[in-house]
Image 1 (spheres, one colour):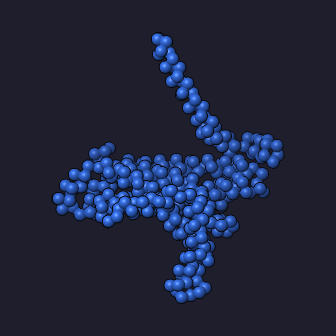
Image 2 (cartoon, rainbow, N blue to C red):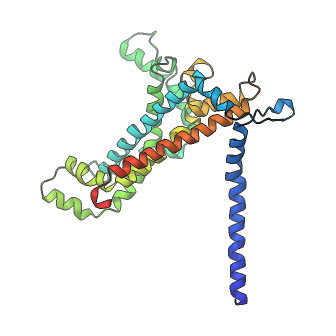
Image 3 (cartoon, rainbow, N blue to C red):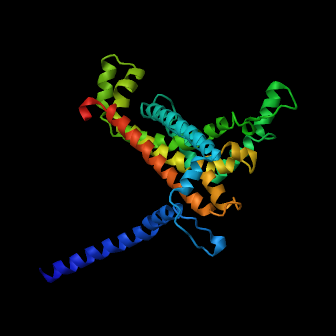
Length: 304
């Protein structure tokens, strides 16, 4: 082997080891540590000692009604994200791509604008808007002419996710719209022109051409929406106030946070919080696997 080739090989493997070490410390180590922690009774208040307790934390979680409450709420967020953000984003992208409205660039900017804002700031703005004494209550008072009327959806466990779902759609739809728009711009325009000449209307073009063409992109966006929904913490946390309101809107990341960092009565709170975080990952993998399976089933025959 030539000296130059040995030097190139040394440099190549040096970069590999650097990248591998960075990955191990930043990604692999926290994951493995979380798994180990969930099988222990680690308690930092008692000198940081620990004992192996097997699946005790997971068994405790499965008996905890707060876990099922948070899981149910998280599934609501997943449904809102996949069933709300993605269809709306796809329709908006199609309207903008086909130039069915004037000022497309302006509307595209407006819909995408929330992506430039801090999630915490957006959550605080929506919380103020939906507060019992906020602007929504003022509008209700104006239209109903009732000076005592209030917007109480954020206070009711059965309706708290209506305003939260609206905020989620408002914030993240623009992100998926840009993805769909970028893929639509790569399409051969002659296909839609030929369909138009053959007498197809916009709804037929959308359902028979656009959706099959973007089936792969829809699956990718669904995976991103599911992953984002199950790790979503900041927007819901900022929109809800401490106490009953936050408990009503509790999702798994908030449940994990409150358990690990606020429940001082639980001596194994860090180990229990680690178990919750691992369950979140398992649920994410299962839902993403189901999304991929559905995508393969409904993939157009020519792409199979």
